[in-house]
Image 1: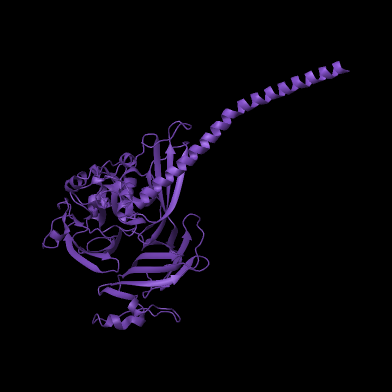
Image 2 (image 1 turned 180 degrees about the vertical axis):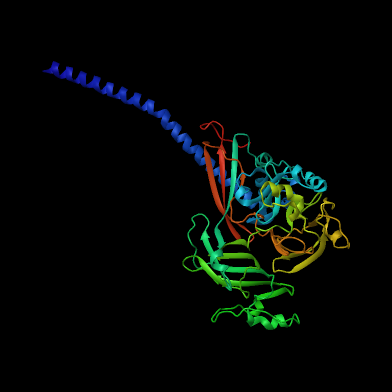
Length: 519
């Protein structure tokens, strides 16, 4: 019996040893995979921490020089903040990111749906204008739906910031790439089908969450508007005494339907009357459960009216701007304008050009069937600069759109001082502060077809929104790397009093399980 017991104990011991060995083998086989998984998780944590540190640095530091947004050629360190104001981004620094995006079209902002034309520099009419743009190393030009021209892909100009250079300034070596994405918090739109109906005094504005599309209720909406009535007969009759005091002609007006909550006369200013009517004013409202606010104008809509809206909506301390023009520029343009850095200086210049300089760009898009449509004869242009508070300054000048005119831009102030200008383009240096540019264009020559308007109103939000040309879209700067380990950080920032969500993606392109270091 003892012997059998001893034999059983020996067998049990052997079984225990075998099980232990099998378990040890299994553990040893599983351990490397466990170690790799754990290492990967640690690296992701490191990447997230690095991304957060990098984002915090970018949105809390102004860079060097602190005003590099007005001249990026001397950039020594990269940061987007206003000097002394962490998390408040400088709109002109963000505008430099937009220039980069236009030159590379990473976000798709210059996709055909947003453009009226596209051409190479060699297709620009007028050797002088070609020479002017060549000084900026511009290779291609796009025309937006609002008849504003901008650089286009592919353009490699020294005044456009370099992603590789910015990456080095941030201390990232070749193992890393990053992508900076700036997105509005709110999306603000005008419901055109409801607003622009004959004899309507109402404008309907909808506010939604930009990310989800859900309506935002109880949002305060402020509408700053510029309205032009070519016939001069659409102001509500309640204000007819104001018009009568400005002109000795018989006043024509529209009777507002009973119960229409017309705005106070103190809420708007008549900028021009007879010929036509141009008014500027403010209206306010609050969104309902569907995210829609109804606002009232003192002028009824009809088909010869033009509107430009600067809309600000806010809720719970978060706000955003939107810009809207009605009708959109589906007519032959009277003027084309563009924003470029001031040559050999700090700041930006607005360049005004006759559309015939872009005829080849437009013809390639089948926008003008007869090239003569863009040679409109003399016209007088009045330009108003509006800073916050709508304090106007103005300059008046004339350009000659004749095809024999000098196309190299000269200072617009020079054209305002001569009686017989023979120039098709000019530039005006802009101050380093956000403002609106209001450009009133009046055609002197009356010989064109009905498709060529007698006047137009062009308004450019310079510095109000960083997108400049295109609103309510995402701004992208940097380079994404597919399938690379990625760290993500995000935060809330402000540009002026508009709220944006900023995200930074940090990509590691080295050994996924190797050590991480920033050079």
